Length: 66
Image (cartoon, rainbow, N blue to C red; front, side, top):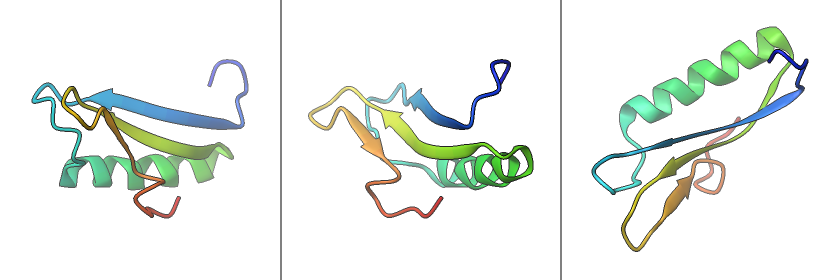
């Protein structure tokens, strides 16, 4: 944001190693999209990192509309 970015990718980990997005992850994504619209910054994707067989989940790949 300090560098006048036009888009961001957000990523965070789940300590449980299960990258399945939680209801809170979806809520935060929605808030980030709304804030991005105010600032004219596109949310490209929100990644949830895990540690098992499935290393991460992309909310964009899951069909979440940004």
